[in-house]
Image (cartoon, rainbow, N blue to C red):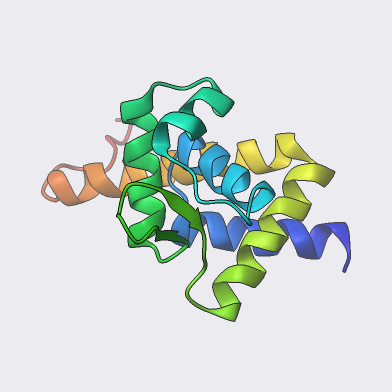
Length: 133
């Protein structure tokens, strides 16, 4: 698979499933430690992020069917619900290793697009731009 194909797949996956850098880091950590069930406190410690932030990220990944819960509900593991989701995570991981800056740039662009879309929905009657006289 070419680098550009992997980056394109990663961009699409990010648009659909990963909204924040914390979600990205938690997802990639779960992937790296795919044979383990991890408590949010352990993930947070490994990643150097606050536990509540980590918990929110892993809950979002669970909602997107990228992570599964342990039997007691306290730990999480890498567990994409479909082969398509698993393939997307692997493409994202490849792209991140090939060009982390490109992945981060894509996330920033996605965030700006979400912000623009949100503003347009919140203020639909505002003029788009004033034209010079």
